[in-house]
Image 1: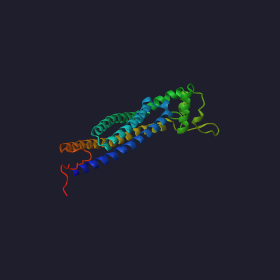
Image 2: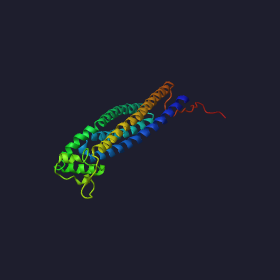
Image 3: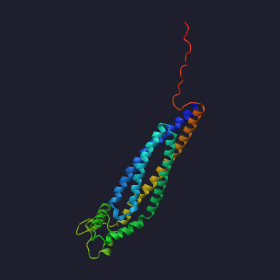
Image 4: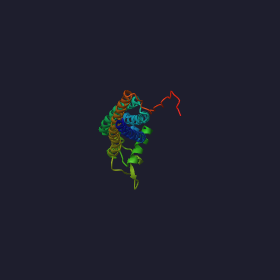
Length: 253
């Protein structure tokens, strides 16, 4: 029985290490989701709601997997077969949800340009009517060092006869000198790179989590077989102690 026990211990320590790494990865996932949510919230008028919901989902999945990792580590330490298989099963279900998230993120990445064009047109049309949209567009132009959608000419097309907003100007030598580039290209790069990070990051996490699931299943299977062999041999999985023989006669000196 010593050889299978050594092999079982190797698998046990391996999956403990992998599960702890999963725990650390989920903390990173929550932090990244929170940072991306804050960035997207800054430009909420320019992006669709499902982009923001993707960050919510990223944070929620990370929190669930942290508790699930703790559950799995507990089952592995105490060598509880039921807990290990439950851990692997629930982990597998969450991985399916993450696959859906990754697919949705890749889909969102492909429609960033069309989304920005549609929303920027709405915002620039209502620039002088809606204070929130005005503040958002000004913030975008200041932070991205840009002006208009495709160029500063857009302001004359949408609001003929009005002066350019101050956020359009890179300097004020003899009047406003506007930024030459529009805001669509830098915003597309900004939003697109974040969405691509969610998609590719989730895929990498999924691959790592699948390894955790496979090792958990192997661990649970080997542990189940090991305990069944112990029962078959009439032993327990704990410390086996042999009782002292009972003396029926007093020793003779």
